[in-house]
Image (cartoon, rainbow, N blue to C red; front, side, top):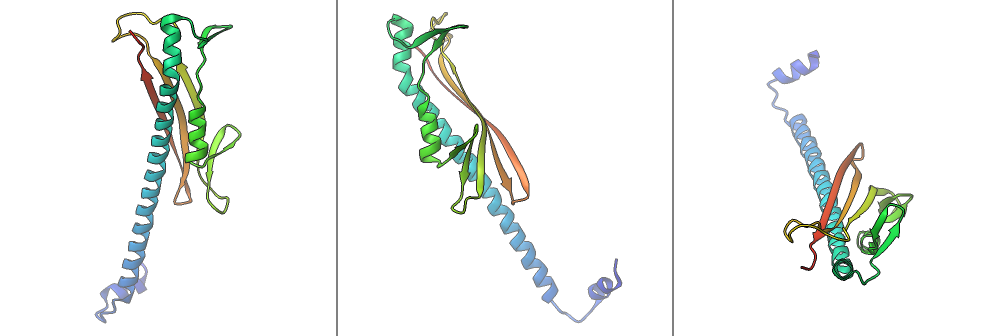
Length: 179
């Protein structure tokens, strides 16, 4: 330990200015960290709730057409592809929510939020929408396969502008058929 620090600690002069300055610096640092934690929580919760709401809207908009096709096989809700019958579902509610409500812009395969100066605030990367809808569910109504929309993504943001944070997220919403 340096001699000046030892002399300062053993001094009987009663000078509190360095201690007050250290206390104020510590208080400002803790305030900055707590505000950054709050910002990170607000970003993750807001993005998760917005995507969950959009997925719920997607399920609600598509359920009637897809289940009519399940039970009646009369609607054009399915198309035959190389690997079998595939459900035709409109997932535009998800991208509309990202663009209109969260203010994200698509950059390649990622969705990015910018501040007023053009700096990146956070990014949704690896956004994948998966739809599961069997054209002929089997079993009892309680155990039959359901129309399910699952969205997975990774939320990337920077903590304290020095430490990159990455949070994988997943939302799955399903609806059972008409029986």
